[in-house]
Image (cartoon, rainbow, N blue to C red; front, side):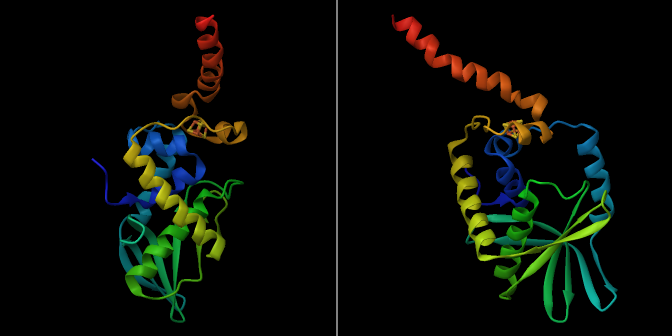
Length: 203
Ligand code: SF4
């Protein structure tokens, strides 16, 4: 069945790697290793919901948002309202990484929140537990355009229902929690061998 809405977290997966999106969304598979379990446990404190005042800001936890235009839906871990401005905050287990897929997920939340509230959201933040600090993220026209393309691509891949091939980025693959499931090197080797095997069979 083709979904009307793609979960916001899947924008993160797709921004990282289309094959990762394929595993997590199309095949609904994940590997539970120590990093994934730690992330789930870290999120438990965030996932309680509720509203509180903290230093001149109203903080609402676990806010459900969606965009009919982009076909995206999911939760913001927190939305702060400060001086009349809305400010989404996403919580992550590790440290700020060199891959910016977290930024795409946060911007996707902001686009949904904008559609729901009719207000412009200029920036948000990602709180990394391991670094114990917030990374500010500006929602630039480039980042917004990237998220719109990712949303369209997510729907295209979901409709196709096929697992995309591994990406050609070994550094990303090394950092990927799905490495043991995906086996990118082995799949690349087999894919590269296939044309040669066909050619040998034809002669
Ligand atoms: S191991 Fe590499 S190709 Fe496989 S899902 Fe992860 S990033 Fe993508």
